[in-house]
Image (cartoon, rainbow, N blue to C red; front, side, top):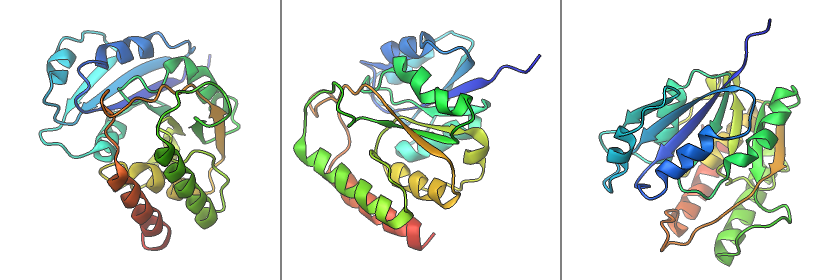
Length: 232
């Protein structure tokens, strides 16, 4: 019999005490027929998230703690280094993304049609209406990435990204904050990976609800696109 595939859900976490338990519960209940492990990397939270994680007891959950805050990209690198699965899925801990979409995200890889799968928040389906300038910045950064890589990605900054483990093993990732998104996109394009997009649900949140990305991260993303396309 073939060995069942294992899905590693890598979850970077920073100050998400109000949502972490619900996210983990949804990941554990995600309707996918593969073995799964959840690798949670707490990036030096100060709001009680660590205490919430300490109470977890499920055998498929592993928690790694950063002593100092290093950023989302650094937390993802730590999680990937500890992941053992054949497929690696990045899952934010803030309830903006819905694990019920796992079957759609995994299908192209399980059917050997893709090496990398991106979610797409802007496919015309239902999503929360929020910040125009966030949308405009995302479209501009995605367009620039496509021009410089030759891709036609719709939503470069999306949090839901899924990889074959062997693809990640070929990448040397460096970004510590939200630069992970443009960096990994440029680098998988350079490898000529088979990239698919699938529509996902998106429950965006406001800054009052805990959203962390700012205009500074948009400026930094522009720098990272140019850096990793031409100088790395």
